[in-house]
Image (cartoon, rainbow, N blue to C red; front, side, top):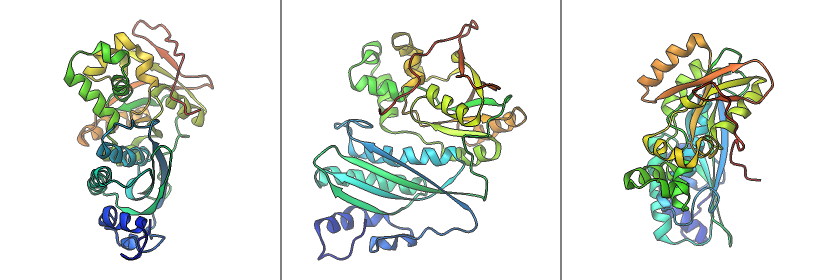
Length: 330
């Protein structure tokens, strides 16, 4: 994403108009170069990237401001789960057209979030496409040397925690696409809440340092709690026992679960909450500091020894069979 002068291409003009004002970090060189500098003072730089594609991660009818926020926030969620503080991001836009009615609210919302999360735009690229629009962001974060929280550190006896509530986004998409949730929920406020949770994730960046200080392993929940838990356990060489009735649900989701089933909540994806394993001796401090950070956390189970798939248990102690664990692109 470079912009040379006003005599340049239509791409240069687009960048100058919508995105140059967002490039406030000195290392971005006001987008006049084709590279940026991200300074480091002895920290590790954590790098993550995610793309959102029209028709896959958002609907063509979604407002452009919510699309911008989602594109950045799904990457911020990854940084939070690694215990990293945001440092900046680069943006690739594949656009069908350059209409101001779409680009202006998109750029404004992206700039607002970049400022709110202290994650400035550093550069990127814009291209045209005849197909679905696509926004790809690579975000950078900072952690002290050797302190990034990976997926491989969970150990038997650790408690399994998750932030926020699970399943809201999947149910929000179900409402928008006329699924069972749309029929089950008659309260407009509940429907609007779920739709908002689908369109605009709440990355838990205020919890990053708490995760770094106390979690043995962590990841963000993007493809579904059940599937992402299985990934974390596989990476750590362990298994888990999960109390299905302890999985936190919002009032709106709880109202719909009888119609859609638990599996919809835990396998639907797009939660962008943090899933982490915390040693028992650190769990009280983790809960206390999470509360101080303004993030609700819930203990849903325990890491156990073994290589098998995590077990899901209901309130009567019976095993819950999940036919589908997560969303899959392929």
